[in-house]
Image (cartoon, rainbow, N blue to C red; front, side):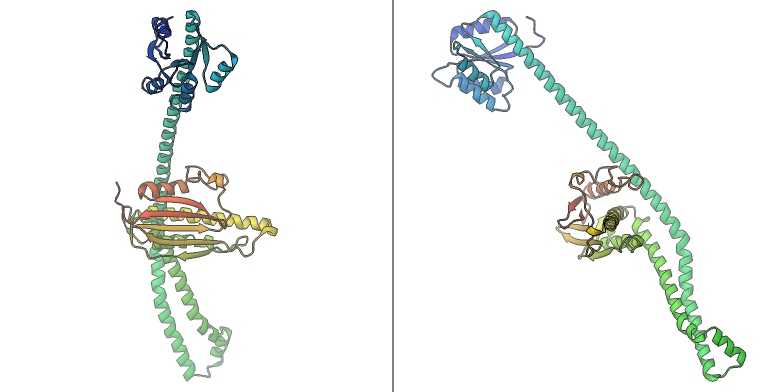
Length: 440
C-alpha cells in the first residue's frame, strides 16, 4: 500500500519471532518502525520518537505488562492521543474489555495474521492522520482568529486615537474661540466695575453731605426722593455692584478653567498640579451638579492628599477626569430618576454623591473617583473599556469616553485604570499614574 505520508509505529514485544514478523510486513508497507522489548523501555522511547501508533504486547514478564504500560501512557497528556493496539493470545472478553477501557483502540490476536494486521494498522493510522490534520486545521484557524482579533484591536485603537485627536482638536478650537470672544470683554467689564463702584461711592457720599446740610429740600426734590426711595437705593446699589463683580469673576473663572482643562498651549509633557485639573473639570460641570426639578443636587466630596507635581500630558489627563466624572453624574441622574419612578423603593437618605480622593503611593499618584449610583452589572464590567461599547441609549453615548481614557492612562502615561464595584453600591474608578514619565 502506498502511503501519502510516512507514519511511525512503535512495536513493544518481548518475543523475537513476533518482532521480526511485524517489522518485515510493516516496513515493507512503507512505515517507519521502532522496536523495544519491555514496557519500561516503551515509556522511555515514546517521548523521543512520538510514534503515530503503538503495537503493545499484553504479556511481557518480568517487567510491567501491557495494561500498566497503556495506563501510564494514557495518564500523560502529551501521549494520551497516540492510538494503542494490543497484541495478545488472550481471547477472552474480559481482557479485551479491560484493554479498551484503558484507552486501547483495537486488538491483534496471536498468532499474527498478516492481512489482518495491515488492515487494522492502516485503518487506525488513517484515523490518526485525519485527527492530526483536523488538529492542525483547528490550530491554524485559532491562529488566524487570534491574528484577526489582533488586527481588529489595532483598528479599534486607531479609530479611538482618531476620535480622540478630532475631539481634542474640536475642543481646542472651541476653547480658543470662547477665550478670544469672551475673555477681553469680560476683563473690560470687570475692570470698569471697580471704577464704577468708586464713582458711585463718591456720588452717594455727596448725597449724604447734601442731605446733612440741606435736610429740607424744595418740594420738587422731596418728591423725587420719595418716588425713587433714595434710602433703599443707597443701601442696595453697593450690593448690586458687588453681585455684578461676583458674576464677572465667575465668567473669568470659567474661561480660565476651560483653558486649564484643554491646555491649548501645553500639548507636550510638563509638570502639572492634578488638583487644579480636577477642580477645573468640576467647575465646567458645575451646571450638572446643581439640583434640577427631577434630580437632587449632587454632593461632591474632595479628599485631596498632598500630591507632588506630576509629569504628564495635562490636557489628556483632564479629558480622563471629564469622561469619568461625566459618567458618574449620568449614573447618579439615572439612579435618581429610577427612584422617583419607583418611590416606594426610594432611599431618602441616599444623597447623590461623588467622592474624589487623591494620594501619592510609591512614586505614583492615585486618583479615586467614586459615585453611589446603581453600579455597573458584573457581566458588563469587563467590557466598559472596549471601544464603542456603551450602556447608554442610542444617540446618548458613543462608547468612546472610557476607551479613550483607558488608552490615555495605559499607553500615554504607563499607568492603570480600573473599574471597581463598591460593596455599598455604586462604582469607583481608580487611576494610577507615575509621577515621572520615564518610559519610551
